[in-house]
Structure formats: C-alpha cells, structure tokens
Length: 301
Image: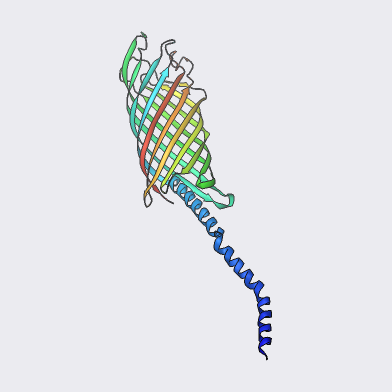
C-alpha cells in the first residue's frame, strides 16, 4: 500500500475518533472544574445527622443535680395588709429522660421525669392570727415538685429539634413557721399539675446543646391543710407559667454536665370559710420562684 493511502486511512480514523475523544475530554474537564456535589451533600447530611445525635444524647440521660431556689410569696390577708415570704432555699434534683428516634414518622419520641426538693429558712413578714398585729418570723419551708413530660421531637434544619409535649405532675409546700400564733403556721399546700409546653434544642458546638422551654400548667385538685385546726381548704383551678433555659456539655464519653435556669409563677385561688375550719380560710395568694440546677448526667445514647 502506498504511503499516501496510509495517510488517508489515518486521517479518516482520526475524524471518526475525534468526537469521542472530544466528548471524553469535555466530560473529564467538567469533572475537574465542578465540585463533587455528591460528596458535599453527603458531608452536609452527615453533619446534620451528627448534630441530631448530639441532641438525642443530651436528652437521653439519667441525672442528678445540686439546686437552689428563691421564693417570693404574697397573700392579701388581712385585707389591705398582706403576708409575705421570701428567701433562698438549697436543694437537689434527679431526673431521667429519653429522645428515641422513630424513623417511620421522621420524628423522635420524647419523655422526661424530674423530681426537685428544696428546703431551708425563708423570712415571714405577716401578722398574728387573732390580734392582727405585725409579726416577723422564719418559715422552715420544704418544697417538693415532680413532673412528667411526654411528647414528640420534630427534627429541624441544622440539627435543631422542636419538642411539643404534654405535662403532668404534683407540687407541694410544707409551711412551718416557727413562731406559734402567727397566720399561716403549720400549713401544707399541695396541687396537681396538668398542661403542655414547647422545648427547642439547639446544637451550639461540637459538645454543646442549649435549650429553651416554655410551658403553661393548670393547678388542679389543690388544697391547703390547716394543721393547727385539723381541717383542709379546697382550691379552685388556677394557672402556672414556667420558663427554662438550659445548657448541656458532653464532657467525656457518656458523661455530661448541665445547668438549668428556671422561672415560674402561679396563684393559689384561696378557699372558703367552713364550720370545720372554725371560720378560717386561705386567701388568694401569688408565688414567684426562680432558681438553678447544676449537675451531672449519664447518657444512654
């Protein structure tokens, strides 16, 4: 075969192969200049999953904490005067909770059970029972509060979690004024709790989860025991508002440390005089409490 024939064959083969080579080079050049979208998407999803797991770990714990609480109490009795109590009490808290992923609903099952105990001396500024003269004394007060929350966690973007929940519980105040003959001596307040709330968990760093919670509760089935006369006064239904701010830190392994700040306000409706209570009754009162729990938790997740 002559030389010019070889040249012609090679030229034709080059024309046939050129489009394919061009396409291959074009694809390769596109791959080389465009970001690898699948990898980026995978990284974002992985980061969001890690943030979600961080929230789950912070919520799925058993915990114990040291606590303090400040109480401000006021009742308008005798009319136009009023009895007041205020002061700090130390205490402790324990709790157990869970946030269990439930993939079929793309949601999490939330539960939390907590118990708080505070006791100490707070200042009573009020009046003597019969004379109505002013009196200053000390209340060796004891407070108990237990609450159960059940709800559904809704994962949001960036690992945030919104948790609407229903709540129920019990709270009590054992009022032990140490000077006899004063209004309110040896009274025991108690009430059931029923309501709902909303919590927001936010991953704030590689080990941090911060949270904000608000809830509205009804005080139901409440009463006060007048131990000095051996009778009870029954309360009507009133409201309680509570706000919490929290921060959880995954210290090492499954061990977490945390702090919770809270504020709450509620009223006791008062009771009506009765023959059994010898005409005594509990007036309308208002209570504001705020405090903190600082503790350690073990995460099951």
